[in-house]
Length: 387
Image (cartoon, rainbow, N blue to C red; front, top):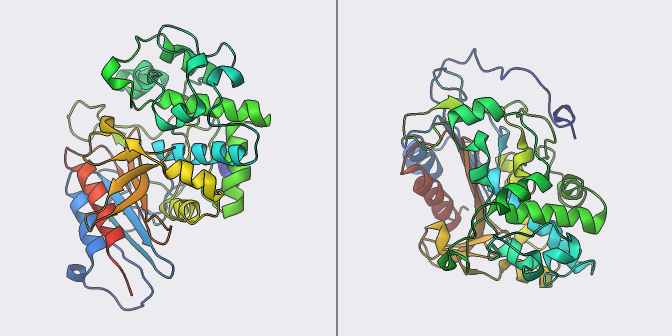
């Protein structure tokens, strides 16, 4: 699916705007809300203060839609963050992939207890993993023990690697071979260990079950039925459609904002992190998912049945099938998923009934407080009720 089908191409069209920092919040009322009385705006400003270039957030409930943005679309420019801009959603893609698998389970075309070997004979063999002993459920739950392919992809791990290989294409089979040549995870990590390879394998299984690519099934089963007009798998395109903010990465060196990494071949993250979307489309997706519009009750229960996920490094976090369960600051829990792919960092959350969502993304990696600030926005906004 080409980028041009989704959105016009061309420049941002923001150069004529003079403000170096713009924060906007919109809701059901036409009256302006004072900054001091608007928690969403304060949260967005707090994220911006952690050192990111730009921030954009949206909070929705059944009858409201609040948005806020801070910072600029490009560093060293005055153009503000775009309204409802496109960005790489990273690992939030996993929720889409898991939803497709669970639809196929609900249709009786496969089972969560099927082994990887049943659908992909001989693909997962090696010292690090054996597909005969790993179920589809374990892939989606990150309890398979399959090593993560990300350390094996140069474009994701250093500025030099990015410059040399940012447009390199990978097939899913290549990604799996790269992953399993690593040593198996330590015994302590086998109960729960986050691995992008799990979802590359899930995408391959979707293709085997349906005869169609992962991207085609996500489009047919989720994107088109929900009318997510700004969400798509970019295929071989290395660009993000306009309007969008640029992304930046220092590759974990802690040396400032880093380099522009917006251009990227997303084939390295098929099934696990390659989708492009907007805050509004992600809000609609997570609301529909938890609201029961995409999965039958039995499959939604499977998705939201969680296990402890200590590898995420957040107290109280659990993981289901492509969906995390996180504690709310006001008590109880919510569901959602963080996402990160080369300078785009996002956090999506939804209440258990799908009635309220909060989605935020930032450009550049920021600092040690950026991740907590993103999750704080989501948790506190899901706790906050609006008239």
